[in-house]
Image (cartoon, rainbow, N blue to C red):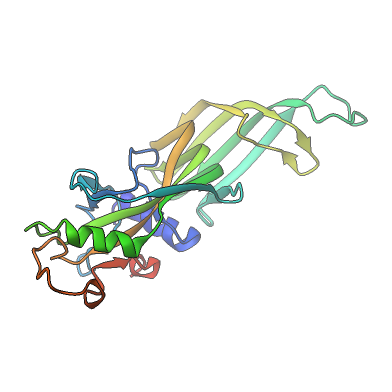
Length: 257
């Protein structure tokens, strides 16, 4: 199984999300995309796994829709592959324990990966942009019907961005990376890493994919699968209520098969 498929499947299994691969790739609500490598094995069905390819967008088809953006309750995700990623850290601060202030501190984090494809995922203060009304969108698509076939094609209905993220995947069986930086605040449980923290790669041993500590990183998306004839010209006399199932939400469980 390729590294990109491993990444997508692990994010789906552990976080219940469709992954943007590579994290940070330019993807927007309303994009129409395919997954050219979207199979987890020889006998598995095609699924939205791995890298994606844009083929069009609702804007290009003159389909009108509205979106909204909302914070996910300032939700953050911190995840590492079970049993194959270990983390150790050291903190250096000159402020005494009696101080009431939470000081800035230098921190060094060592991550050890013991399996090819292992993931370390740290995404802070996530927010989502999504399409408002799917039912209205379906009717709008029908009204703009064209003789086009969109088999194995997906509509991006939402994208989740991290205000700040650090994401890496090991491409070798034994690898190690050391991060160093500055964080605001020390608690008894360790460093309080927030969006104002700054990290740099101090050293690495092994081969990695790394999305360095960055702002506004696309990390997840929600998709609906097109019926293969969704843009096929139709009988205009049909009541829109008679036209069902033209956009089908992607079931996360289907990514795990």
